[in-house]
Length: 414
Image 1 (tube, rainbow, N blue to C red):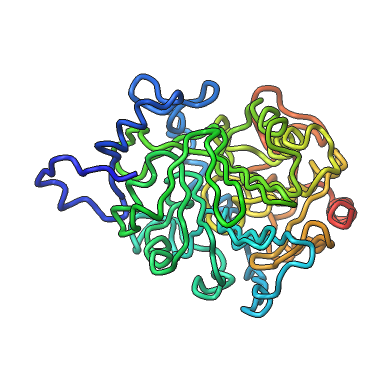
Image 2 (spheres, one colour):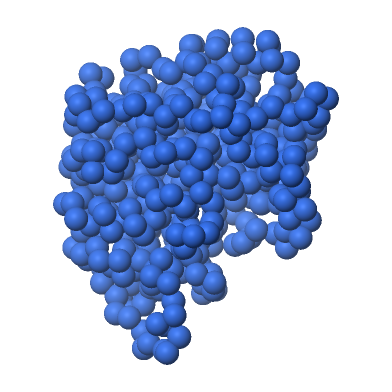
């Protein structure tokens, strides 16, 4: 759907291209008709603020404390899998193969079609090339070597999910872009032809290359410029082929609607669930590993062995105060407790959920380790197997090393 640009002001020339464009015209009219648009803004499926809490002033000292800052990055090089063009060109034997490219970027090969979620290939997730969170590991595969893409799916318009340079590179291909309502304004501003953009409201679907792509609810917010108007929608996604179904959470806080999504569209052969960049300062818009596992189980109708969970939104950018490796450790702990199947591959490591899972806890050799007796800044105060009531805190991720190693290997090999 094409929208016309509003009257320009002299200040428009100072607006960085990466800020994108605001919805206008016919596009904005459609947004106003959405049942999820109320009071001039998109609203969440249940109460959540549109921006992080005003308590950010309490957050800043923690974020800049030296020892804790060091824990938020790996101590050694992240072992990126040497994925080859030939490896990605070979069809998945089972019909479903996932390749986590880092953060929330996942290449999904499903029933003969190829879908790329939230591709971010830039060195920084920022509107500026000289500032902002920088990659902690290289891109596993050059964008041009990912092979044919039938669809690019965007969950929302934050910089770590919607990257202008990557979109412009993909514009030179024939791929379709399937995005939440309003996000098409950014894509058109960056040169994507309008006839290659499909914008969906929650529970609307599009058919691409034999797949059905459905936007489903999430609990988050949007915005790229200094003025966050909340005029672009955020979404999780269901992709269903003739034989397989997968789910990508985008960014979201935990909410009971995962059960409804699972009941209507699941169960899933694989879920890709956000489990990183969480904090008590924004616990209603990002999930902890424990909450991510809860969402996975909800999506699977409470059956822990129905499908595989791939944890995403961790490992690539430093976006929160928790230690770098804590999302992976917390997911392993939660999976072990629930008897769930997970895969925690290296960036760029393809795997088929139905044909064996990556089982090496590779992040342990990479992570920074605190001084003897030090308490990790992002660790939970609750004992293993319990939650701090009402805090949304992450599970304890730093149990005794021998116990943790045994737990991780048993879970990942299950």
